[in-house]
Structures are given as structure tokens and as C-alpha cells.
Amino acid sequence: MAIGDQENDIAMIEYAGMGVAMDNAIPSVKEVANFVTKSNLEDGVAWAIEKFVLNPDHSSGHFPAR
Image (cartoon, rainbow, N blue to C red; front, side, top):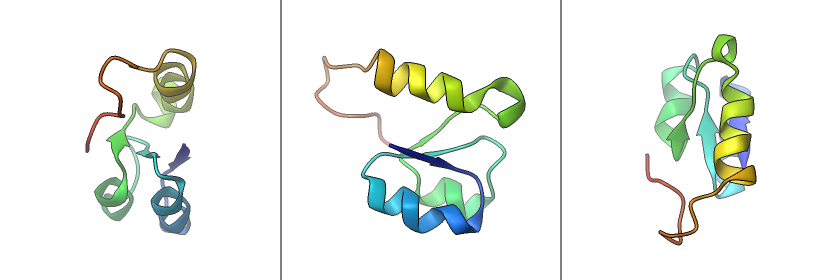
């Protein structure tokens, strides 16, 4: 999982397999991400880690789509 918000994060998000964009990310980052989390002011990184790393949804066998 990779989390980003700016243009320099796009390659990392694409490569990671599970890309997460911050809600305050630029549009091009949101377009390539698999999921958009809360903003940085709403602790979006912590929220994504809790959702996808600490408490993943194993029932579906995959991460949520964009």
C-alpha cells in the first residue's frame, strides 16, 4: 500500500498495487489511486492504515475499487 497526494507520488501509487490518495490530493493522484481516504487534516493516513492494514476486509478477497 502506498499513500500520496502530489504528482511525485503517482508512480509509487501505481507501482504499489494498492494505491491510496488523500482526499486533498491533486486530481491526477485520485485518478490512479484505488481508494481515496480522508484528508490530511482528518488523519487520512491513519484511517487508511487502520482500514487496509490493521483491519482489512478479507471477506471479499480484494481491496475496494476506485
